[in-house]
Amino acid sequence: MSEHETREPDPQGPALRRFVDPAYRPLFASLAEVRERIDALDVQIVKLLAERGRCVRDAARFKRDAFQVSAPQRQQQVFDKVRRLAEAEGAYPEVVEACYRAMVAGFIAREQQDHAQMLPVGEADS
Image (cartoon, rainbow, N blue to C red; front, side):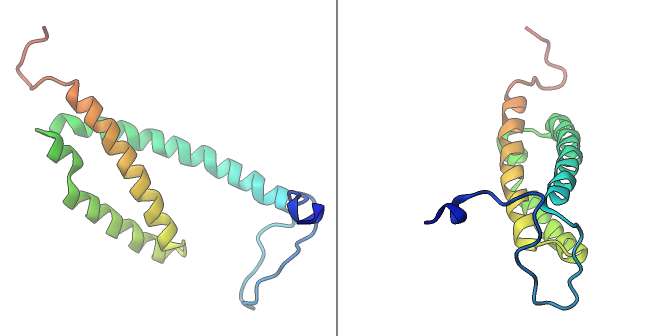
């Protein structure tokens, strides 16, 4: 592999490839601009994940046991819903679904931990 093939792309350099689709319209003039926007989106995404995590934590209060925490039927509903949303928004459905599968698995693992540390309503702290 040549040095040219192993370097990172120049963030300020010109586009090196183009899409064949004549309907495609570039969004940014440089890779640096793309990365700046992605960084801004990451801030928003992490804030939303934090909010979702707080909701997941609170949901543990309404579940009797580990099976109810994992809620496989609800998981499938979520995956089906986000796949439809992705298609409607012009996102890559397979990427959105993969992200959600990983995210839900992580949240369930965390919710299982939270649930295990909770007491049934009416049971006194000891």
